[in-house]
Length: 128
Image (cartoon, rainbow, N blue to C red; front, side, top):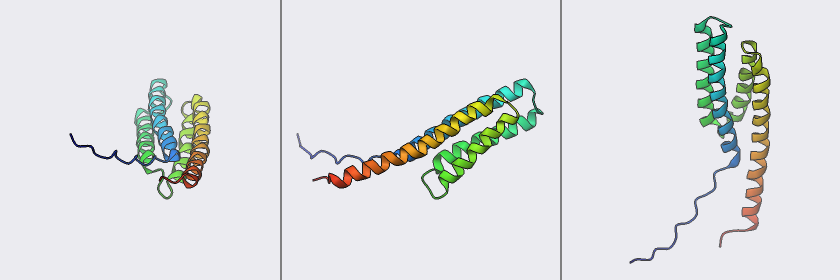
């Protein structure tokens, strides 16, 4: 039986990308359901509804992998405007999209704060 030293702990993943990725992915599901509602209510031609909904879902999912890179947070913020734009087809999306805008802002702010505090703690407590 060989005794190997324990593996070093894995570095913590930054909180800001985690929070924003989760928000964008949940938002993609929201847009998918809003697309179904818009289709059921027949608020626009089906091709328009499915194209707008599908493209927005795909963009949100792609952006969830892009956050943390240069321009990723700006693109995610612009995507919030697109989600609010669904309120034109389904008026309830103004309210639900507004909730996700607040979640996005909280993810940016709180994630950044957690990352700063982790960095401060790591600097004050170097691994020996």
